[in-house]
Amino acid sequence: MNKKLIQYLKELVEIPSVIGNEKEIADYTQSFLEKYFPQDRIIRYNNSLIAYDEINLDKKTIALVGHLDTVPGENEFTGQIIDGKLYGLGASDMKAGLAVMMGLAEHFHNKDKKFNLIYVFYEKEEGPYIDNGLEPLLTEFDIIQKADLAFALEPTDNKVQVGCLGTMHASIIFEGKRAHSARPWQGENAIHKAADFLKRLADYGIHEYEFDGMKYLEVMNATMVEFSGGRNIIPDRFVINVNYRFAPGKTIEQAKEDVLKLVNGEAKVEFTDLCPSGNVCLYNPVLSEFIEKFNLPVEAKQAWTDVARLSLHGIDAVNFGPGDPAQAHQKNEYAPIDKLIENFKIFKSFIEA
Image (cartoon, rainbow, N blue to C red):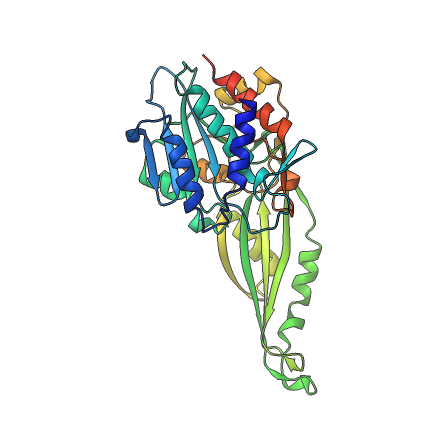
């Protein structure tokens, strides 16, 4: 199976699948799944797919979840193996995880298993929360909700990452009065009005937050600005995009209040792209068994993944994948082949009857 895993990953990275252009890779995945699942247990929705075992109620059920898309990027070594690393856009984030899912589907299609398996391949993870392709799979079909535990095979270097930070963006809008820069007293500089807020934001720092023994770091940062006018005009509008990463256990409404408190009524606030935090499901018995069986390292997820979306739909979920997190969204991205093989072996051993 090792050679097949490598071949699957090579084929996956050679298919361009930048967000919004997932049809080719979805067609490829569907053709693969049709070799191992009857047609009535394959669901195609736009460019997302679900394939699943006939559910045996005497067994627990595991969902394996992976997104088909990548961010835009460059890779000079697509499909090449150099020093034990297979290169390609999305190799770590997260086509190595997809290759493991394919290997497991092939390996177990005619074998007894300890668990029922549900495979979820979906589009548009790398874009806005509202456009994410996993959401309609969860709302239009009820099969994923049958899972007792879901694994998102995001890059974690084969560590179990529990929970995840919530994330939101907010436009902080300062308004002034336009004037010529030679006569600033005739106007009101919207950029200057933001000075106190920017100082408070810069001083916000890192807030440590512990949830179920896991430490999460809350951070709030300005990431983009926009303004009206030109270089010789006092601007009458200045907008700061603030990105807030907040810990599990905090609701979106509570996170909004944190931002509003920092703004202190000095500007208008428009919230966009609101993504909830993910549950820290260390209580889950399937997860406990998984961690203990392989003595796996466990850490907090200091980012956002669709673990949060699965949590909202009542599904316990964690991140566990073969990719290297540091390679995500990098130029000349690669995935370590030894981690790919190790990840497959762990899942295989856990699922075997």
